[in-house]
Every structure is written in structure tokens, then in C-alpha cells.
Image (cartoon, rainbow, N blue to C red; front, side, top):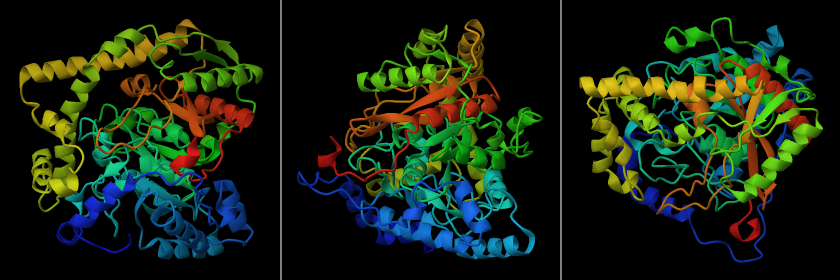
Length: 547
């Protein structure tokens, strides 16, 4: 996990082991009556908040070095051994040195802010210019180093955070295969759900969601194009903030689409997610989209936390398409709505998007993502200067040459579809531009904004996704539904908050609003969290104990 190795080393010595390990993740259930894994501690790290960690360090009862060591021990006991979650791809070999420097700085000059000395994991598609890898979960990019930190990695370091390591993900952020198993990557194998070890953690930010849920870090970063922060947050019972497009920089993040990609925090509480978000925002010349956030971002989003945040808020209930996809989730959703009403919210039910059926029928998102992926990834790879991987076609060729390691269960149909797009064809360009405009209209003006205006709402709410499905490496995901698409098309913010359990599996709800409405959504989310207090740590249940 910590050693420096190359793509060639892995392919030469680890091919058979990698394939065997991936198969082993989906092993047969344990016999009936098997005991749940006992969390080894340290128990004062379980469900600890960033504010509590800062209080301990301020009082001299904890150092950043000790905290790094304790999280590393948990990762070894839970992620590598024990239930073997496979949520963390590698640890930062310099984390302890960085933490020691931050401890000295605290003693001599005081803390930089709320993240000083706090260990944070980042998804493995976020560049770090250090001794770790950035691979999007693929073996193809092992052995090369990005020329500089991503803007967000640099901002975490500037805030005093310790980048503890890289998390597993659905390879290439779930944009390679037609029907993959979420949470699987060639580099990391299959990530597991800490609440039910035979269930999927959802993707593509699966490792970030599972690691936060299992208390392997204080918080993590995930990325979203459509659902990749929200779904793993909902299924792993953590808070996930999918920001407005342009609020956080994508510079140095392996892309899918500049029209939809966002990066945001995943944490166990709304307060922790808000604290991390404040360190990430700001205009970045490396990402032109961030220019729109000028004067609309805050370095401290914790100021919007409010345990009474639901009182007097007008919240619209989505019922069509983006709700009603699983009866077990519907029960939790209705109870959440009643809890909001009891907490003083004005509930407008239903308050569906006027164009919801048009969104469901549109194929424009696929048109945009296939075009953008080829163009944006080729641009990223050109700047990355990997010795052998320069284009999407190079990745396709690599996967074909190393199919036993990279494609033991599913293929690269999406790669092939994207590569087939002619980026220079006038008709293709025209269709692409029309699709971009239509997506923005569908999600924004005629979708979320229209519903907010028509019903005079502060926000909309929907169930985040269905219950975690069983891991199936042969036939892929059984995804029943979710509510992430409208905010993804529009580039608008959304926050998942834990709501309850159904048959031992987490259920989350999503608050969504218009552009740069993060303050209002944080207020509502913290109010809902205070009322329901639904979050519970996982028990790493074996399949025989889940239901």
C-alpha cells in the first residue's frame, strides 16, 4: 500500500494475484450464525468530528502525528485485514512527516484553521504531485506522476490538512464499461459496503464513501458527474455535498465532462462536510468555470449550520421519476417528510419538476458526456505527460493488451463509444452544442428553477437512491433509481443526508436547489440531521446477518 511500484512491476509480478483477489471479493456468504466483525478501535475515533479532533489537539491531548498513526492502524485492521473493505488504494508515505511539521507549526504559530492536522483521503482521480499515484483506478497510469498538485489538493495542504491517501473508485469514474460493478477498479479490486459486506458501496466515489463511513479518516473528497458523490453517500450513510459547478476547481482532476464534473466533500456530519467545503472554494485560473463563483463562495460554510434550519422553510417533495423507484425507500422517504413537517417545515407535496418526463426521455446527457470525455481526457493526458499513455486510444490499447488484469469481468464499451466520436465533424459539433444547451435547460430553467419558482420553494427534496444491491462482478450493478440527474444537468448543488435504515441498509435523502444555494442547503441539511440523528457507524455485517 505504501511502497513505490510501477505499472510494469504490477503487470509482471501481480497479474495472477490481482485477478484472483478480485474474484475472491465476491466469495460465498459465511455460514449462518457467523459473528459480525468487531471494530478494533481506537474507539475514540469512531464517529469523532473535526471540531472534536481540533479540541483535543488544542488541549494538547492529541497530535496530528498520533492521529495519522491511529487512522493508519484502523485502515490496516479494517481495510486491509478484517472485513477487507478495499476502500483505500494507498497511504501517503509522507503523511507522518507532514503531520509532524503541522504539529510544530501549531506549537509555534497556532493552527491555520479548522483543518489543521486533520487527515483527509482523496479519490484516486485527483492529482497529487507527491510519492502517491493518481490513476483513476487503472493500471495504465501507474508509474507516472502528475506535473503538479490539483488545485484542490493544493488548497487542502494550504488549509493544513494531511492528505492521508487515495481512495478506490469505480475505474475511470464509472465511464469505461457498459455494465460494471460499482467500486471495482483494476488497481484496487472490489470495494465493499461496510454496512453489509456483500452489498455494493455505489460509485464512482465508492472508496471515499466507504472509508468515511468506516471511520478510516476524518473526511474525504469525491467527484461527481452524475451521482458519484450522492449515491455512495446515501448507500454508505454519510453526508455528501455535490457543489455547484464552478464552486470548486476541477484543475488536475481526471475528467469526464467539464459540463458536469464537480468535486466535493464526504463526511459523517453536515458540519464536517461544511468545514471541508470552505477550504476548497475560490476562483482558479486553471479552471475557467470557477470565475462564476466570484463573490458567491464562502471560506466558512459552517456559519450556515442551524439545528432549527427546517423551521419555516418551504420544501418541495419530488414524486415523479426521481422518487418512487423502490417501496422500501418510499417508506423512509415519507417518514423523512413527516419529520421535516414536524420540525416546522412547510411541505409542498408534490412539487415535481415541470419537465420531469422530458428529462427522463432525453438522451442528450449521453451525447455530451461521450463528446466531452474524449476531448477532456485527451487534454488532461497531454498535460500529464505519461511516458506511454497520451490519448483515450492509448488507454483502449492498454486495456486490450492487459485484458486479464483490466477486463476480467466487464469491458470498455463506453471508451469505444467515446473514441468513435468525431470531434471535428461539423454535424457532430452542432448536435453536441444543442445537447449541452438542452441539458442546462432541462435541469435548470425548465426543471429545478421552474419548480422552485412555481411552488415558491427554498429547496426540493428526493430520495437519494435505492438500497445497496448485492455485488455482482459478472452482470454488474442492479441500480433501481436515483435523483442526481437534474442537478447534474443543471450544474446545481445537492446534499445527501442520512435518513434511516431499511432492513439494515442505509437510506439517504437529497436536498437540491439552484446555483450557489449551498448556504440554504447546508442550513436545511443540518436541521434535518439534528431532528433525525440517523447516522450510525457500520457493523461490517456478513451476508448471513444483514437481513
